Length: 199
Image (cartoon, rainbow, N blue to C red; front, side):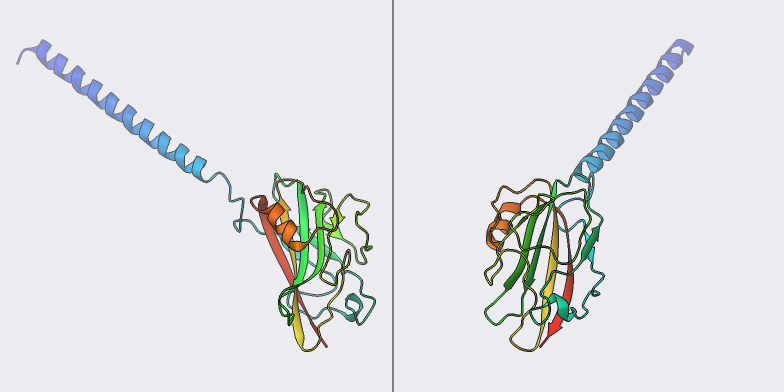
């Protein structure tokens, strides 16, 4: 075969290889970008979890009497961490799933600002707090916190905290049902603390 023909064939082979490598590079790049776009961060639903604790009782522990209807009936101190970026407000619901008539609501707070990470004990039973947060109505029915008051036996009390991507457009005195409807689709993260009380 003439030398010129060999040179031409060699150049064609090199060109084909370059095209093939370029196509592979493009495919790999698109694949990587697709993975990044489909899973930018694990935010939303249950993919992120808030950590909520209390200095008054441990997870699954007994709630001291002062935070119940048998004592001073004041709200317990609560603290939280791991609030995700993009959170605009927080909401808290405390309820008792062991009540004879079904789930019993003990406390509702929403529009908690993101510049705080705790609630001291004895939050006053008023519609709007100094930090701008609003309190809903519990099942007693009263504004603010009402502590454990089971008719008998040991009940569980869940303090559920939600990080939201918006502020909630509800008036103070809202019910649990109204709050759950308002936060649907806006939950970035959630967490809970469970305490027990026995009478």
